[in-house]
Image 1 (tube, rainbow, N blue to C red):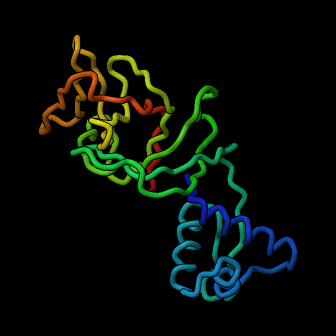
Image 2 (image 1 turned 120 degrees about the vertical axis):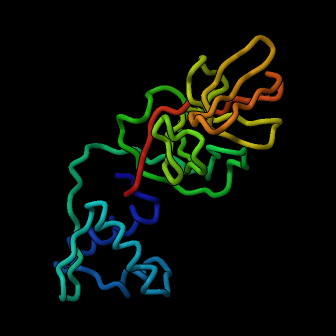
Amino acid sequence: MALTRRQREIYDFVREFVDAEGYSPSLEEIGARFGLSSVATVHKHVQHLVEKGFLRKALHRSRSVEPVEPTAGPVVSLPLLGSVAAGAPIEAIEEAESIDVPQHFVPKRGRCFVLRVRGDSMIDEQIRDGDFVVVEGGPEARDGETVVALLRGEDATLKKFYRQGSRVRLQPANATMRPIEVPAAEVEIRGVVRGLLRRY
């Protein structure tokens, strides 16, 4: 299960604190370490780590957070470069943090990054709003591949890619939506989707 950069930092801090002190840090101590004044914010991060299986908590006991060693195998930290539309195109680059991704999702070649999906135009490919896609960056794609495409140098969208002579068709995987058909010169491929992450 993927971790955000902040979740990874908190998990590492809890693990190091327990190793050094023999007991768990309080929410206030975690907040002080990361400059978070709101205990509710710290609790939210800790709860996400519990839900993802990285921490466990004992009920009705203070200092009850303890690390669980993940068993999912090695991970790679990739940049999370914002959101991409699976629907109407939107600006892709909105934020800059990192997210841990299972190593087997990451091709050995090329530069990879992660984008958060917005919209439901790819639901028939099981890519849903709120999912994360692992993208192998590059300007080339084969017909039928799911790509991150930049339209007219401004708006990014997630669609299946098809060349049609001097034009390109960006095909949604949702029968209720129409494809985007534009001159090839107006489309810049930013990368091809190689993996999918979903939070429950």
